[in-house]
Image 1 (spheres, rainbow, N blue to C red):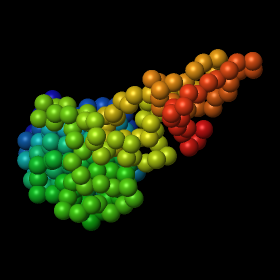
Image 2 (image 1 turned 180 degrees about the horizontal axis):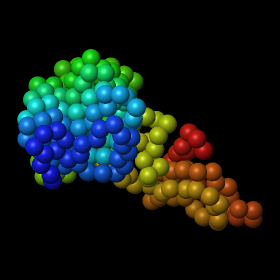
Image 3 (image 1 turned 90 degrees about the vertical axis):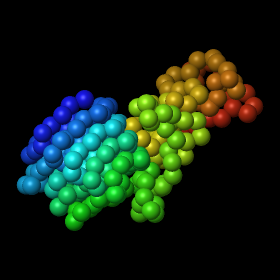
Image 4 (image 1 turned 120 degrees about the vertical axis):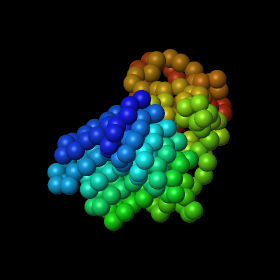
Length: 239
C-alpha cells in the first residue's frame, strides 16, 4: 500500500527491463498521475516488462490506467488478475502511444472506469483471457464472463468452484497441480494426484482421481501398477 504524488502508485519503471513474478500490487494510489498499480515508460523501446502470476488489484489513480499504465513499452502479462482498480479510463490497462502489450491467461474484470482496457495507438493482443467489455475481446480462447471471485470486496481474488476461468487458459500451459492453466493470477487447486518419475507397486483409485502425469514416468521392473475402473488419467501435452 503506497502513494505517489505523480505516476506509478505501487511501482514506476522507466528505461529498464522489469520482471515481476508472483507479486501482489494492491491498494496503491497515484494521486495526480497515471498507473495506480504500475506505470511503465520506455520511449526508446529498449526494454521489456514481464508480469507473471501477479495480482494487480484495488489500486487507484486520478488519471488513467488504474491497474497498469504502459507507455511505449513492450509488455507481457501471463496469468495475472487485474481487478477492482479505479481510474478515469482504462481501469485495468491503459496502453499509451506505441506500447505493445501481450496478454495470456489473464483476468481483467470489474475495474472502475469508462473502459476496462484502452489500447490507444499501440497494440493489445489477448488470448485465453477473461476481459470485461461490451463484446468479447478478439483472440483465441477469450471470455467476457464473470470469473466468479470468492470475495473481491474483501480482497479475495481466488476462483470459486464452477468459475469459467478454471482450466480455461492456454491448453499447452499448466497449473502447479498438473491441470490445464486457469485464467488469472491465483489458480484453483483441484482434487487429484500428481504423478512423475518411477512408479512402484501401487493402486490408482477413485479417491485419488484424476491422476495428472506431469513428467515422464515408468513402472519399475518387477512392480505392478493397478488402475481401477473409472479412474481418470490426464497427461500433459509435453510428456
